[in-house]
Amino acid sequence: MASRSGPRARPALFAVALLFTASGVPTLASAKAVKVDVCHARGDGSYNLLSISESALSAHLGHGDVLPGAWYPDSDGDGFGDPDATASEYPEAGYVDNADDCGDGGAASGPGMAELADGYDNDCDGWTDEDFFCPCYDMESLDELLAGLDTYAYSWAVRYDGFTQVTSLRGQEWSYSYEDVQWQAPTVGADLYRVAAEDDAPYCETWSQTWLAAPDHSWADDGVTSYLAIPEESFDVCQGMLDDWMVEQGTPLYSW
Image (cartoon, rainbow, N blue to C red; front, side):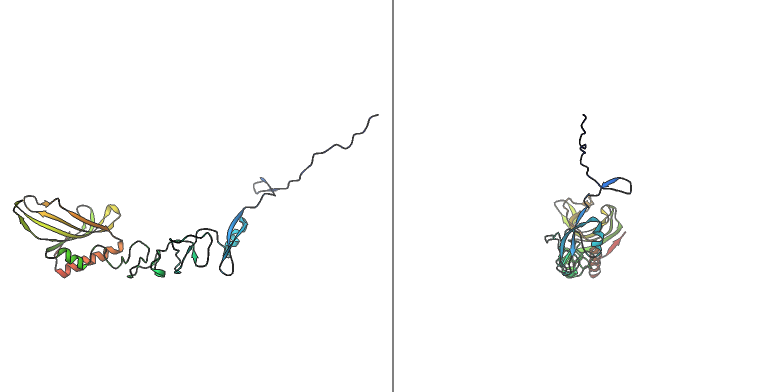
């Protein structure tokens, strides 16, 4: 007699819900939402770290939360952080998200600030008081350089060697060399110019060299030069310094 078998065993079934994207590609509903960290602003000005859904980030940022990053103390309240301080990952009261302060001038120093004649680098460009003095020479040093010499000056809009806006203030004294059987003129100079090949960077220079008369009519091989690249703001200051000295001394100026 045939016997009946019991119910057939069936494999276990696990329901998996599917979501469909706009492109029709199914995704698991159980997939975890993307999380991001955010610094949540408290009412007392402090922050605490929250891990939130990425979809909620815009709303959090909209009401004052910020992303973790590098934050620097701004002790003088000018909006620029101290580059020498240790950065904090989270903002704190008195911290800003940059390290652009050059520091020593207090609230009067920072990128874009006006330069003041106060002994500080107010605009953070690496120069101090450049709008108010010439880094190369002043009236007293020009007096010392050219003391007792016959002075004259040349100026060129564009000089033969490519330099532009050149002023060359010179002093010399002729003497006769019995050894060389030649008249010579040891010469010193204070120059100001731009170098077109270097984006018109301003330079100032002091130098000394001996001019040889006939039969050479050339400079001796004894030149000594000291030159300095200067900020754009100092160019006009140095030019005014040379002009004032020449007027004061009655120095003739020959222009080309």
